[in-house]
Image 1: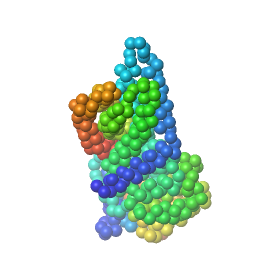
Image 2: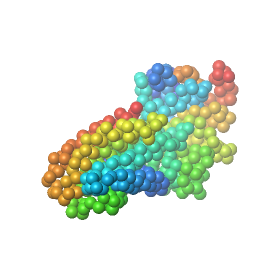
Image 3: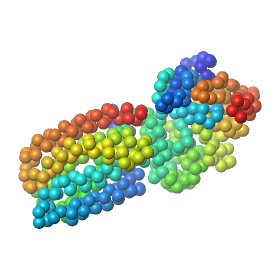
Image 4: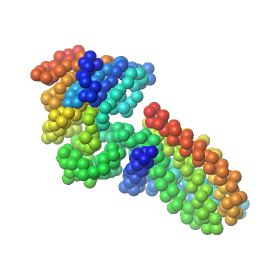
Length: 230
Length: 226
C-alpha cells in the first residue's frame, strides 16, 4: 500500500505514481502515488473538494492525468455518484449490455448478480422508475457483473437504507476475502471501517501517509486523520 | 477488429432499443418532417414556382433537420446518468462507441427518410418511381456523410450546456457541401434523367463520405478524451 511500500509485483492490482491532474488553472491532484495489492481495501477520506472523486476517475482511466501514470492489472468495477446506467432500459437490460461489452457470454451471471443485490423481483422494471437506493443497487450490480479484480466506490452507501447498506457491507467483506482490491471513498467509518484494511487522507490534492487499520479502532484512526478538517 | 465490431453492434442495438422504448426522437423527427414538407409546399406560389422545382430542396431540408433531432439524442442518452463512463470502464475499444453510434444513427435517419419520402411524394407529386433506386442511392450516400460528421460533433457538444443548440451550429457548415451535391444530384433524377447525368455529383458525395467517415473515426477518441 502506498508508494512507500514495495509489494510483490504479481500481487499489485493498481499502481499510480506522480499523478497530477488539473482543471484549467486549478490543480486538483498534486502528485499522487499509491499502490494496491490483492485483498487490500483502502478507505479514502478527506474534506469536500479534496480531489477524491477526481482521483478515483483518474485511477479508473476515465480521466487522463496531466503527468504521472497509472497501471491497472485486471478488470475494474466502479460505483460513482452517477449510476452509469440507461434510465429507459430495465435493470436486467442494462446489466446485459454491460456484461456483453465485458465479453461475458454466460448471461446467467446477470441474474446471479441481480440476486446478490436483492433486485431480482424488479429486474425488468425501467431503471428510470427506481428510487435512489435501488438505482445504487443496480449500479453496484453493474460494477460487479464481470467479477473485477479492483473495485472503486465513491460513497457506496449513499441512498441505501439500513438493510441494503448491511447487505453491501457484507458483500464487500466477502470480496475482500476473495482477494478483490478496493478503494472506497466514504466517511461511513462505523460500517465500512470493518471492511477496510487501510485508510488514507487526501487533502488539497495530496495523499497523507497510509495507515493500517489492522488491530486498530477505525473510528479513532479516522478522527485522528480528520482532526485538521473538523 | 472483431472485438470492435462486436462492441459496436451491442452499442447500436442498445441505442435502437432505447429509441424503440421511448420513441421521443423518432416521433419529434417525424412531426418535424411533416411540418417542414407542408410549410414549404403551401408557402410557394404555384403560378410562378412548380412543385418539382422546389422538391429537391424541400426534400433535403426536411431530411437534414429532422435527422438532427436523432443525432442530438445519440449522446444525450449517455449523459443523463453518465452511462458513457460505464462503457469506458469496459474493455470495449473506444472506436466501437463511434461505430455503434454511427450505425444506430444511420438506422434512425434511414427510418425517418423512409417514412418522409412517401410523404414528400404525396405533397409534391413528383414521379420518383422512375428513378427510385438511383434516388435511394443518392440519399444513402449523402446521409452517410452527414451522419458520420454528426455523430462526431454530437459527442463533442454533449458536455456543453446547450448541446441541442450547438450541434446544428457546428454541423451545418460541414453539411453544406454534401447537401448541395445531394440537391444537385436529386433534381435530374426527379426529372427522370439517368444516373450517368449526375455521376459527377455522386463522385463528389462519395469523396465527402470517405473524408468525413475517416476523419470522424480518427478524431473520435480525441473528442472522448477531452
